[in-house]
Length: 279
Image 1 (cartoon, rainbow, N blue to C red):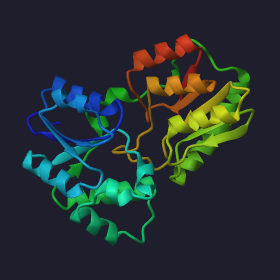
Image 2 (tube, helix red, strand yellow):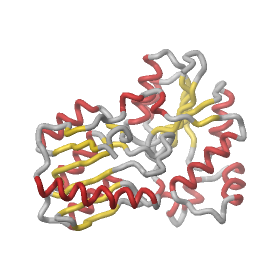
Image 3 (cartoon, helix red, strand yellow):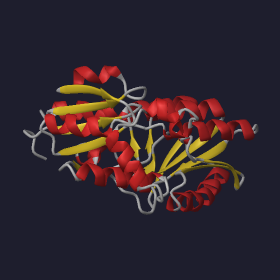
Image 4 (cartoon, rainbow, N blue to C red):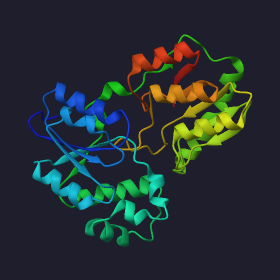
């Protein structure tokens, strides 16, 4: 990666944009960050070369800011709360610019599953000479290694639930619905959809009062590593503990684990197993 050429960072919610910005700064790579208002954190500002806010419907502004900053390649990092596009007053919240209105009109017959929508957005940016790259090209060390990462090993029952949930989660990913399932005694308690993994875990805890359930989170069979890569971290473990879960199963080599040492330490403190399984 050319350390002289600036990279664009389209930042959403969570810790991931910070990790990308910190890694780029450590390598001396200039970063032009366009942050989604209401999702990204203002604390990103001192970590990047240039920092700008934009709204969810500000595609034209984002493209102009990247081009003005000399960016020809950009990365997406952080969660975008897609549920907001279903709000009854969504157009007032999103405030779409002309570019977004034209983009939305041209794809009205397309579905809005994550892959369909994000690939369309990437194609739109490409029209202006902006190439989307995976943040993992910059931070390959974030991909989790295979094995049981924690002191606690899963029990025989939990291992059976893990195997049972794995194929189900893969099928959900193939359909581009979600990447996580909550399992107890080979029963599906909750399936992740638009709400995200954390809320699916909490719902699983509400429905499974017996606790001790297993959460399986995998990459899609057709996973594009430029976006929507399954990601876990300390917040995932906090949610699992709060809901009463005991095992987090993730896919080795295709899942991002943020702040790995802290995440594993927290899981050990709560008596939670983290298992990274090969596909």
